[in-house]
Length: 256
Image (cartoon, rainbow, N blue to C red; front, side, top):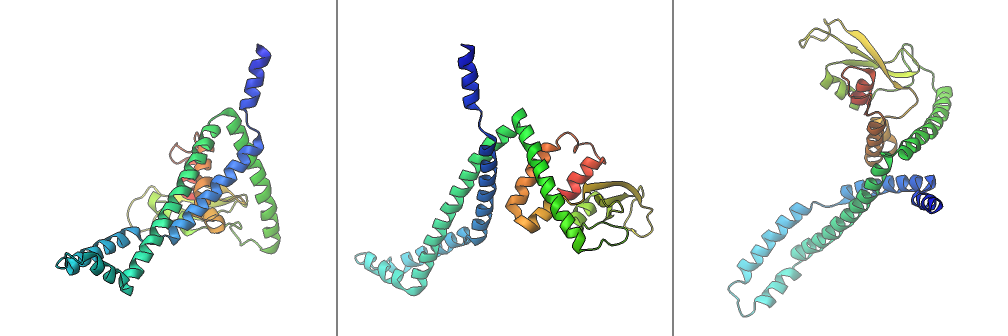
């Protein structure tokens, strides 16, 4: 009986390759859905236009009760109305395509999320992170040989996203003097709008230089992919990103 149970457990476990493929499929569906939404015409506006035109048809053809169908057809055949309904039909098709992609992605996302919460899933994520880190390290080494680092900072270029997040938190960010880190974070105890006269104290250096973050993923792979990476990052760092003003909390707020 014990042998049978072990066989059952083995059959339920899916190979690592399955999760790698599923992760890639989920990311691809996210990118497709994002592109689909950009192309999608304004459905609400089209619906309003259609309602207006249908009302106009009623007004024009209401008196001709006996020949209402002929009157309506003649109005539809007018190029203005015909083109509008063609656009509306295309818009409806596009809506359905986007819905299918979103639904397909949701199925894969729920399966992945459930897997990530298991010990096997945690080990899988750590392994994936190591692979990603090795790839990023190779890329960083190549980039480092091509570009010389500026004085007082690393090769990381601070994005507008990080500057906006810093403004919300009331801190100042600068390129890190530590070449292994991305940014140095400065904070002041004084309040008020006069930034120049404040005394800023460095509180932390955050972000591993050479690794991607939310804004850099957007630049390289698009918003959908970046959101997936952010979701996974927040799951991995759930324990060390919730205590205020710690390095983990600052990295989460400024870079993710």
